[in-house]
Amino acid sequence: MKVKVLLFANLREQIGTGVELVDLPDSASTVAGLRLHLMKRGGAWQNALADMKVVRVAVNQDMAAAGAPLNHGDEIAFFPPVTGG
Amino acid sequence: MKVSVQQEDFDLGLEVLDIQQDNRIGAVASFVGQVRDVPMTLEHYPGMTENAIKKIVEEARAQWEIMDYTVIHRYGDLQPNDQIVLVAIASSHRGDAFAACQFIMDFLKTQAPFWKKEHHPEGARWVNALESDDQAAERWRKLKPQQRLIKP
Image (cartoon, rainbow over all chains, first blue to last red; front, side, top):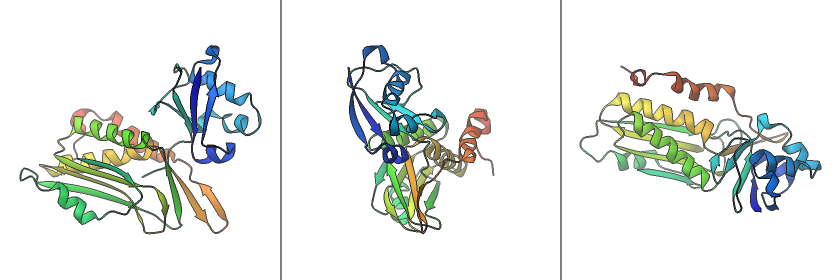
């Protein structure tokens, strides 16, 4: 299945892109599965997603936990803890 | 009843005037956050940011009487002293207005997807989230409903 991955702030800068369409095996259809799939690319992806204490995840624009299931067409965003206000 | 995520500046006086028209309103509390010290760039997640703010406002409306409100948060490049955020709450009495205003700011800081990048003379750096901001939001969760009204 295909999902859309968005990256923000320092994660976007580290990885060098803000958006990417990802072909995800059905066996990896959770947030945690997607994260491991992306980390297997190595390099900046592996570094940026290594420490989940400093990474938050949203699925279809709602905050989501590692076990959240993913479906074809979902939008998954990875970003650092927020600092607005 | 307005939530706006925008690049443009805002006028506190006009925004307050806009929400104080109903003659049942007896109190308007407002908070303005502004840039300290160094220029910054504010990034956000278009769509999710607006929805996250609306959810926070709905949580506040479930707890306090809010007769009208305006929440504005800016993004883009901002200079020291520039305004960043406005929360203005109109209610019949000040207790609800003060409490809802503070609640919305506390959760906006920890739930709304914005990220600040500060431009220091020695280089740019992303601002780290503060544990004290998480604690400020968490404090509300620990209060019983009857404790959530700030008494004069």
